[in-house]
Image (tube, rainbow over the protein chains, first blue to last red):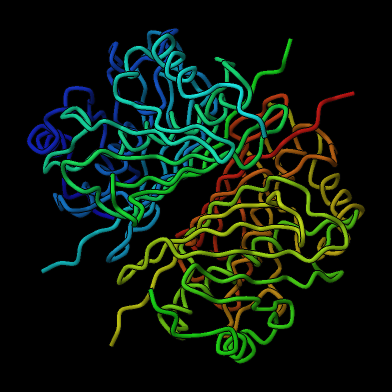
Length: 140
Length: 140
Length: 140
Length: 140
């Protein structure tokens, strides 16, 4: 598969279309194997006790996979998440950013499927794992 | 199954342990059939275009199911989400609150399973559907 | 939603297109609320110890939801399962048939979503719960 | 993680405890990275048209992950599947065996989580992907 949007193009897309949350994320790498996205953890992502909240992890996997798909098909803004199955496996390490590694497993005409592994920065054992599907609007 | 925490007790629990997000939610009903939780939609829950974001819907189903479990077992704060499978089926109606209807399907000693239907307030067709599992810590 | 194939039509479809497994199942009811399908449990569905196997339960939910979709759209044979998220909650009762209650939650042009509750015959607590999505081929 | 059952031990376990289906499978490799299991496709696994059925693919991922867990914890026969989220992405190639590559992502005291990629023999693009959780009975 060919990459049609690189890290700079994906970052620009985030800033323009998702300005509210763009500053939460850093596009670390984009390649044929997928996209790695960093969540810069801030207070608003934490549950009491200092662990990253479930919704913040969900948002990370959703944005990471969305960008992985766009890196292949370009800025098709109407691509929408249709399902997500996520396993929360370990408590994120305190005071650590999270990294989501997304890969596209299928890119059909109307449906894309992929998965994301989430790690606390510098740790080998995953915090969470998700599989996601997206609906891609028909070309005009 | 018996209800051991009612709407007032669940609301008090939310305010004390989840103060950051407690004002987003309203516990509408608690009974043997489950818990209905309303998300009072505000700007911070919206995507560009005015639709409620995926992470906000995820947070609603997670909190609704968590409260449904606590309504049966009491305030066991270390209960944690282990998995969620969610289908996003329809765009939420604009300018509308969301209601999550959570029911507990299994309440084991260490594992609870349930599902949640999400509706735009006053609409009959569901916006999303999720199944969730939680790990319940052993009693001391 | 209107029902366009009733129990007799669905049974005939099963016999013609799924002859290998048609005798495992009995279409119990078809209505606007969904389809109830019975698995007539035989030795080939059992694990050692006498409990119904996971693959036999998976097959039941898949066929039940497939028939629920066809009951709305007619015999579109190329409709295929794209995903299934299933929770196994309780051991099926020994020596009992299983009943799968399938309902369609969304019927789009190219995607259908639904869920299925599985019960041991005569029991109130579910054995399993599944959500499934199907791809519907475009009309010619 | 250490491997405590090798391919020979897992094969012997299958033959003794799952004699009905043991001949469907071949344990190809066992290592710290996981277990690869081959489904020797026969007529009983096929749908009309010659493609491997959904339940046969489900059974492959379930057995592959089960063996991957046992390779780490030994023959704990009461380990049971509690959930599976599976995406069917491509039609299996006709006349081809399937290979399931299972890896364990978390091995807790009472819960194990892993995922499986399924390929038609010799093909690079996956047929299916599944994540599964298992309940492990407490040690006596």
